[in-house]
Length: 268
View (cartoon, rainbow, N blue to C red):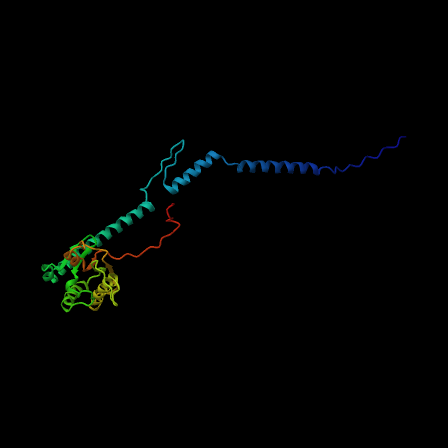
């Protein structure tokens, strides 16, 4: 009698994990495919979105295939236009100030004509209005002795009258000394340059003593370089020997240093 075989014991499958692993890899692959698809940007949609944001912040209509209505507000003045407006206002203000100074200068000229009327009638003094202001031309025969720089007593009164008119104002004043072309050579005045400069300074000192602010005053000696008449006749030389007082209607301006980089020297 044949012996019965023993039933075989079930065999364990040790490769089942491969199925789960394959499923996991498949899911991971699907996940990354989806993520990649979501991360890809549509360029056309991105441009539409960018244009819309730009229009919203700048209130500017953007050209596109399908126009989108945008509310446009009145443009704000640019910085350049604001600067131009400021410059225009400054120019107008400066012109107003200049006109005020011109009016004040005319009043000063009238007062000078009144106080110098006797000498004007004698032809010893001339008052002239120019673009710069008012010029008082005084013949030196009523101010100084020949070859001297000391004021005559009578002329000192005339200079004091002029100083009293000018003291309350704020106009710059330039005092010029002029001579004829006849040379002078003395221990005190080696040439006409020294004589003309000292005469101008003498008048300046009298003005300072009469309460005219020193920072408004300038004294210059021109000798015979600024003649108003030919020096070949006695009358012309007498006219050239003079002291000129220039009352400048323009306010003194502050200088500005020149920048060599922005203002280069011209090429030679």
